[in-house]
Length: 291
Image 1: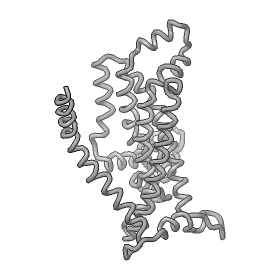
Image 2: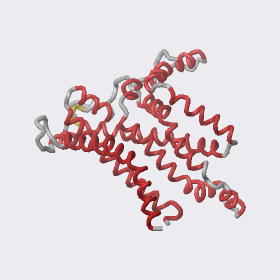
Image 3: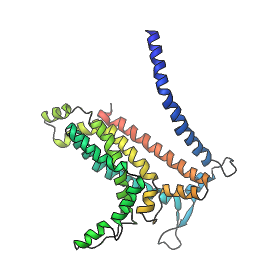
Image 4: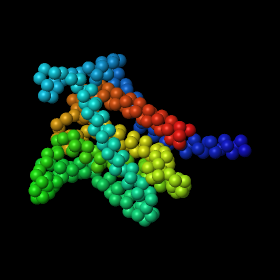
């Protein structure tokens, strides 16, 4: 028995070896380099100046004569705000859609999942340019509104356009994790809850939501992280009118300020890891009645 356990452990270790090597080379090593660059100067001497600069750099406030604001804190707030809004919209749209797909017939599930995945087969840049064509002042949407006599609206170059682009690009990343959990859900539990007199809202709150919470957390994580660090969507759909953290990192990298770019990325990484840890702690505490 002991030999069988030892052999099984050896096989398991060998099977997981390639993943562990991949994780070290392409996850831990790059993160270590980011941290190293963040806490060194151009001569690679230890310094906290890059981190301090993130919190202390100031610039004139828009529309406020003589008023100075913390540049990167304002950019961070804007990035977090747009990412949270986009994630919330994706959750509101993706959760019911994932539930509908999971309750459909196997053939309908395949068809709907294919329709969701098709946009992801196209290049990310092409999808963004497509939305530029739709949302610009002389684009498809405004031409349609003009023909209907409703008047044109200015969307391109606003936060609304950026949110639309984020939702469109990242919605599948919300649907897929939730669907994967709901597809495995024992729907006899829902029927039992209904038979015991639980109202539809109670079934959702007490049965469906707790069982699907791991998928919700994974979906939020997969949407929030790319949303908060995006730069191409904000550049094109935002028409260069405002900066997000991804734009700030790219700008510093293009300007060859690699150490400050790494510092921004490091602070963002720490903030995201802390948020993910808090989210998972909250989920573990409240799923299945806190057990």
